[in-house]
Length: 205
Image: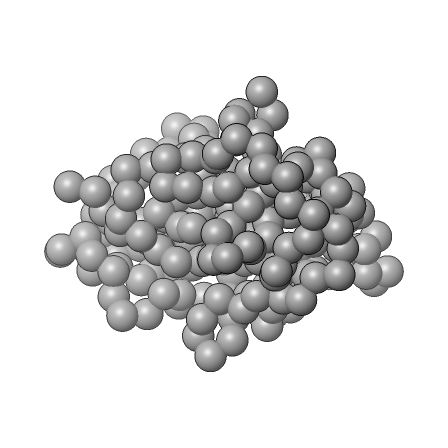
């Protein structure tokens, strides 16, 4: 049975075979008896991007009353949905994200909860994914930024867009302007300040 625990760039949690490169969580949002989601889609403002492998830890997905394991095609997908790197299992990535946050915003070293509070305000509106206006040409966006055109999410790499699908990324498409920015603006600023997300091989091969 395919569990409902795959996350799209729009932040929706869906049941598709795709697993991807990363796991993560938003707190406990499932019933372990049925391995199904509760009505809520987050229980914490700390929306994390975690490593699928970490030391000798092993977990059975949705098997106990612990954080709900979610999966992302790649880090661009997770960042677009509003997640950020975990300071526990991805410490180096999290510190690089925080350093880029400091450069982008010109602020002192923020705590993880401070970052989460900003992202929470940018990723949601009325409990739904918040899309943002964008005034940059696609060619000027940093690698890993995600945009929306006619309801489809696209990841941008080297100034070229690739459609996100349930089976992976599509071939490059020439898009001059996006209709909306999916990636939260603060995360976009982090990408512009030098953070390098882990992208799916289809985008880098």
